[in-house]
Image 1 (tube, helix red, strand yellow):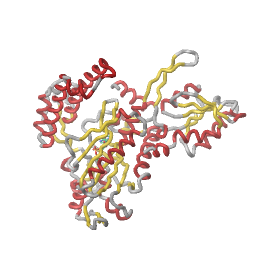
Image 2 (spheres, protein in one colour):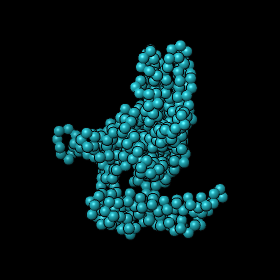
Image 3 (tube, protein in one colour):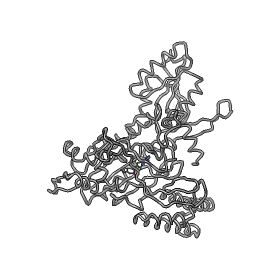
Image 4 (cartoon, helix red, strand yellow):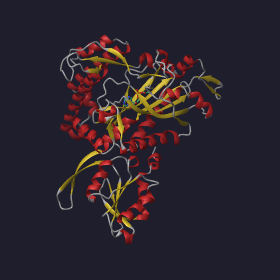
Length: 515
Ligand code: GAP
């Protein structure tokens, strides 16, 4: 997929009420977005798919909703005040600011793309007999490029681990990485930039009243660990899940809802016995990838990417990457956070955050496996993979086109659109009668304006799985024409069968049953 498709998706999501730039009438606020009438329905459905998969289906996982504001010491204990930084660099000619790590990663992706091209060419040449593993291990150009990637990666990771910002800059210079705007290598030094937003609590604006907008929801779970464990009488292993807003003052935020300054996370912290964390880490990797693949967005669109540089709290970490229109990028992180957070909060608060294990007959600070997915990124994954422009043949032999969002039906914002063929002869009344019987179980939309063809196009564009048309015969035979979004097949069915047909297709229960 190309930049062009990405632009089309952005334009489409505005035109059809999915996403608007925040405060657009004032020319917008950079990297902040509002969800419109269809966007918020889709977002709520994604939340439900995640929440039910985590909380409802697992007896040992419960959900909470912690406040965005937290005691400022939380962020000292978690390490965010000292280390939640991005290395930034400016180009002196264009005055454009970049994340140094992103510049290097994009450079690596370009070399990776060269390898992919070689493989594609060879695949075409050899067809069925092509062996990719052998080709990667023997082709001189591929080997040369892979060695380049490995060498740059190692230098860069070593520099980051040693917090050697001068060396990070040197990697950029040595690899001739230039600014996309000015085309020059006239770079400033690399500086660390803390991503947390701060504000003041109450009316006194001195330093002591500085509080932060949470940069992750996880800490709201950690500080409530004991409250939940005791009041819920939870036994290890158990999890606490939460969906909520997080805020980061991202330096480079030019990729629509992929990187926002205000966004939402769906996080789950799973508390386990020390020493069992690697087994649970593997288990959660499997569980989470299954949750993604069950949606049917295409198994080939996912891959795991293990972290080269581990965060200060982790002893293992991997990303589930998704093939966005801008390439394979992080969609979800799975981290083995050790006992870092609870131990830190124990130390900074002076309160014991331990678990008494009655089987082992001893107390310990549990280890934690975290699964953390960006709700907005999940939204973008669904939107971008379901967006399709299609050419379709009309009955008279001419060609037409449509844009269709093939959103998984259980997540679609509107499940059923109800059309009276004409705005008279009692058809609207019959249509509204059907609407009123189905609206309690399904989000339905009633439309009577324009031709049926135009109404179909509008519903295709927002991903509605079914449309029904009420015509004159309906009044006597109690049947309607039902049209399927994906196949565009039409069928005449009894009104009394509609509930069952819809339920089979759109009820989230059937998705959850596959997990
Ligand atoms: N508690 C761990 C944590 O916050 P993270 O990798 O920084 O880890 C987790 O973030 C997920 O949150 C990411 O995989 C991504 O989906 C989402 N995310 C992070 N920063 C984001 C941003 N600026 N805009 C949108 N989503 C973001």
